[in-house]
Amino acid sequence: MNIIYRYCLALRWEGEPEGLCCLKGQIQLAQLNSPPEILELLLTEEDPDTNKPFVDQIRAYNQIFAFTSIGGARLDTNLANARKGVYTYKIQGQHYHQHGCLMPEIIEGIEPKPQFAQIYFYDGSDIDTQVVRRYNLMEKTLNYTMLQQLQYEISENNPFAHIFISANDIEKEEETTIAFIAIHNTHGKDMRNYNKPICDEIALIHGDYTPHQQRDIIIKRFDNKLTRISELHGAYDPLQYPLLFLFGEYGWHKGSS
Ligand SMILES: [Zn+2]
Image (cartoon, rainbow, N blue to C red; front, side, top):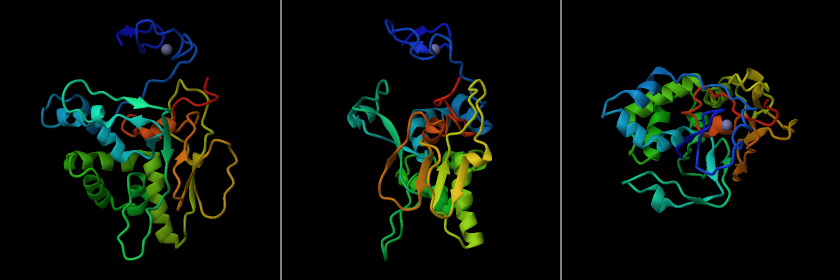
């Protein structure tokens, strides 16, 4: 992958047809926002104690903070876990993103075990407990201090984390029960500006809810199913890649121009 495409500077394989990425320059995506200072340091600082271990495990650091998981395709774990040589990610089948529910399974007499995105909601503004949970979930293979720094950064700046966390606080303060979180697909169409979701794009819902947009993402409180997210939803990328889209910038979606 060594050819730089003249319109959007995407990397292409030799022989790959033109226009796949941006319709020969017709679609112009915005530059991403600069990362917050701590993330920029982890990515660029020439410090073998921080930069290298972070970059080597960057997929794991991203995944532990992600709001969705990757489904469908069968991952070749032999290749993906190879410790030597070029990192290889080989999948078979269709690739998509999916989300689960807000709460872990509740079994009487057993301490609930929230996973991934559930941790934001379950522990709410108890950020340090969130860090410990994520550290243990990854079997202590990630650096605790880095996890802590990233957790604080995400809790502060990421609108999806913010709504999950504040849902927990609202439940406690108002003695109410949040039934759903809805993430609408109504973002502005001009993708030359990446924008944070505006406030009513992510909503906490108490009672029954009928989606008014076909592609709204509805995260239920209890639901044992994993729900597939449309790749046409603007939040498809920021929900899966919180370290790339730390400010929750909506990406390409149907209707972008
Ligand atoms: Zn292009």
